[in-house]
Length: 380
Image (tube, rainbow, N blue to C red):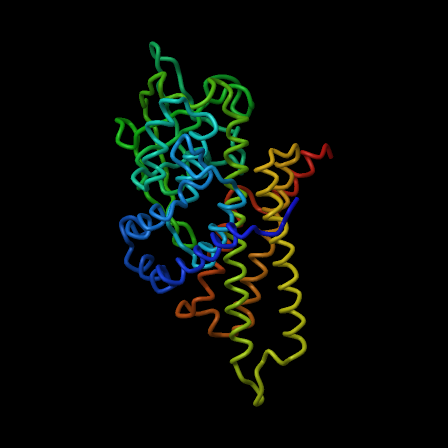
């Protein structure tokens, strides 16, 4: 694997970094949280992101995208993670858009992807259920035959950005036991369809999620995404790609928390000298730097493994998520502790990274889950 960046990839990273500096700040994130904004993100910023072409990075040129890969998208997500941008790129591009990209029919791709890439349509994936413990095959949402179509009933939880999504891709059981891999099908559902109820919630870090309840929701044959009863493998691929994208976001966040902490160590004076001159704090900072660099290697390896369709891409993703979950929490915890009392207050920005670290750690499976997954994939 080639970990170095090409000139074009470096330019993409630099432009994303400049965008975050110019278009977003933690003051904006605080204002969105405190005002309980109806969307939870900025439509203007979203349009700017679309205008830069970033929403089209992983999609084929035939679908209106740039035809690039996860490595390029990870570079953008890393910079957005530094600024804690709440815009729904993960849910729209990698979850909802990823399903259409990987398994959508020609008609579905033509109807959805150009509008998505232009920033005119928001999607998400409703897959997680209460008590599923990160499993995307353990579900009680069912789809039963109704003529040539389907009727869906059940409930999904922690559906990212569902309150603003124009369409949701919902996983439902069309056969088999509640925890079987066989018998899962994905359906494309309009948010305004009768019987679909979306209840907005906010996660610990102020991001958007929702409870989605389906009461005899009608779905036509054209709403099926992928093969009937074959949705488990599709969910594997979608969630692996989304997890790799989240890891890139987490990498950016842990670097920002670390930089904020180092800046404080250089400026906070005690006994007439900066506290960063104390050997104990130097050792902790050096250890944290090393852990972040290890996380960077894991994230880039996962992104490239997905791009190369590596036979062990799932293992690379599991390693990256386990590493990022541990390291982001370490960076945030150390940041708060080294800031002392002020780090415990809401007025200081370091707390935003602690909340984001905790929320991201639990998204798509925490470190313990990912290590167990890795072991299972390796046959242990």
